[in-house]
Amino acid sequence: MKSAIPFARPTRRGFLLGASAFAMGLKLLPYKSWAAEEKKLNFYNWDTYIGETTLADFKKATGIEVKMDLFADNDELFAKLKEGNPGYDVIVPTNDYVERMITAGMLEPLDHDKIPNLVHLEKRFQDASYDPGRKYSVPYMWGTIGIGYRKSKVKGPIDSWKVLYESDAYAGRIALLADAGTVIGIALKYLGYSFNSKDANEIKAAEELIIRQKKNIKQFAADNGQDLLASGEVDLTQEWNGDILQVMEEDKDIAYAVPKEGGLLWTDCLCIAKGAPHPENAHAFINFMNEPKIAAQNADYIQYATPNGAAKKLMGKEYLENPAIFPPAEVIARLEEAVYLGEARNKLIQDAWTRIQAA
Image (cartoon, rainbow, N blue to C red):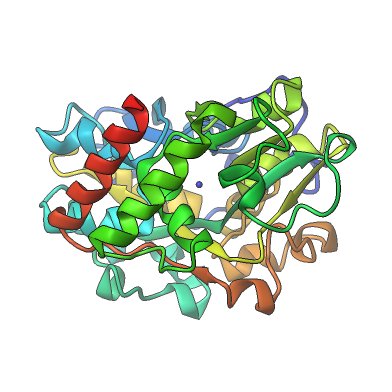
């Protein structure tokens, strides 16, 4: 939906005047709560999905050093932990994968008393159908998937998934995500079905649509479509909104649109992996990430929508009134959240994806 220092550039707009965490009077737990653990944390995160100084600020505030590894999509995350946790503490699954990992016994329950900054979450994010009572997850960011494109290279409005899924107008100049559920789900949406369809015939129709279009697709991008767009390797790409917004700041010829057929509304969450070697540090980290000033700095840098209401009060209009970050109601109405529908449905998607990749 997203590296500690993803680009060699200054912090975005410096709206908090470069204030560092250790000087902010943060609502952290007393140090004794994590002093018994070694001062380490293993973090498994999406690429370009954390502020430029956030991990360094956490170390200054707590003495805990973070080692961060990156994954490209939820399937990679799930596969990495499915056979047992190789040593990660905090992970960042998307909402449907939160439920899938809860069902599979892959997450540790949270101690809310160790995360006092949860009070800053907007009311609508304090509970979730995929995790009632937020027993296992804390919302990190939310957003959309749409089309990032180079304005000087397109003809007419980019308002339909057709340009990526059923057109040769930009043959060899388009990229789709390398994410089975998302790519097939959006194909389903384009065909007029639900993103979460369990109908084998509908999923087959989406599969066949993508296979027919493969000749025009330059790459299935492993969460780097924004880089392909910025470098000029493609002119249109299917991507997470914040990833496109990051490159839009550097290149005014790049734009972002959510097609008229609708698409995906997602929420990424901070969770503690089952068997985490540093659970106290993990709670401290999740609490730190929800300190309003830290949450605001982080969201401002990575350009995704924060669920932290107190953080939003610290943000400027450029962020709060950007429709690519906070879509208007009429766009939201066309979107669906991915739902975990069991392993039988996942097998339908994965089998279709295997045939798409082999075609």
